Amino acid sequence: MKITTWNVNSIHARKDMVLDWIERNRADVILMQETKSTDQEFPVDDLGDLGYDAVFTGERSYNGVAICARDEITGVMKGLPGSEDQKRFISAVVGGIRFISVYVPNGQSLGSDKYAYKLDWLARLVAYLPSFGLPGVPLVMSGDYNIAPFDVDAWDPKEVSGGTHVSPPERAAFHALEALGLTDAYRALNPDTQEFSWWDYRAGSFQKNMGLRIDIHLLTPEVMKRASRVTIDRVARTKEKASDHAPVTLELQA
DNA sequence: ATGGCATAATTGTTATGA
Image (cartoon, rainbow, N blue to C red; front, side, top):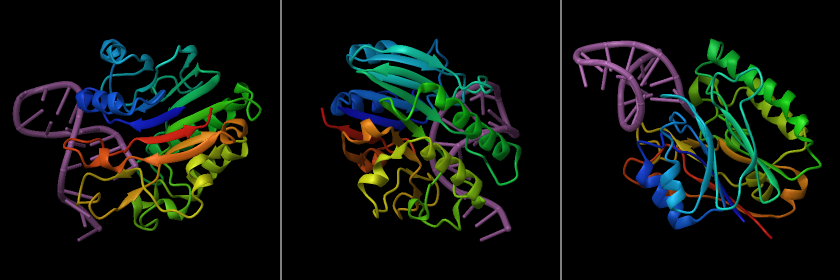
C-alpha cells in the first residue's frame, strides 16, 4: 500500500501536473494540503476519471485539505474543533486505516499573532487526537506540519524563517504528537539521513538544496510495523511550475 | 539587513507562504 502526502500549493494552478503525477504513481491514498479550492471547485470529476474517490474541505485562496483514494472512503470528519474556520484538517477511513490530512499553520514570525495561532492550533490537535483511540488503532496522520523536528531536518536551523519552523515551542508541540504514540516514519527508517521536502522558490534554494523536511507521515505502532520505506520525490520539484513541496510517499507491507 | 518567487484575490497592489 502506497500513501502519499503532498502540499500541492493550489490544485487549480497545478491540476494537470498533479493529475499526471497521480496517474503515473498510482498511490492508494493521497493526502493533500493547500488545495486553495472551495469545495464547489474541487476537481472531483477529474480524480474520478483516474479511478479515485475524494473527500475535501476547502476555502477560497488559502488552506484546504483533501483525501483521495482508490478504495472506498468512509467515516469522513472535517475540521479541528475550535479552529473550524480555517480548513486545515480532514480525516477518513480507507482500507481499515484511519487517515488524517493536516495543514499546520505557517506561523509567519516569532511573536506574531500567526505564531500564537500556530501554537494554539497544535495544542488543539494534541488535545483532540486521543478521541481517535490512539495509540492502539491503525492511524496515519500526514501532512505539512510546518515544523522541522530536528536540526538535521533544516538546511541551516539558525537561518530559517527568523526562527519559525525550528523554534523550541513548535518542536515541543511536534514531540507532544509523538508522545501520543505516533512515530515519524521517515526518521524511524532513516535515522541519520538529511533530506528535505520543501524548498523556497526564491534565491535558487532548490538548486542549492536549502530546504526543510516538514512534510511528514506520523504512524501508530501497528502501522509502523508495516512501514518499509518513505521516499521523497525530488524530481517532481524540478518540473516547470512545480509546487514548492515534493510529494512524500510511505510504503506499507500487506 | 533585505530580497529573492509564486499564488490568488484583481488590473496595480496586497496578503500569504516557510
